[in-house]
Image (cartoon, rainbow, N blue to C red):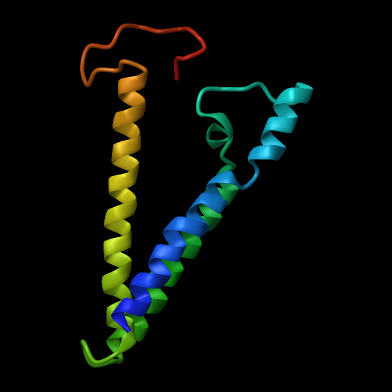
Length: 126
């Protein structure tokens, strides 16, 4: 069961996450090309809908509480749910590491220091 969960996690990271990252990118690019939207640093990721982010956060928190209630009724380590939680935790760590590496890479590309950055009012500024 653990190997199965690791396989599912690998598929999620390699297939689902890139599909979510590309979701709406062509629609955003089309709106930018026609002049409906002005391109901002961050591309389509800077056009996050507040309602969509709130909805996803509520779904995540709700599913966490549902899973917690389910885990309270089962004996530890003998059920698939605890293996799923272990894989989930590892996946979260990997995703956090990925975000950290991408932020460091972006910081290096834009020559951003941790302290003492010069004021930038150009198009590259956030």
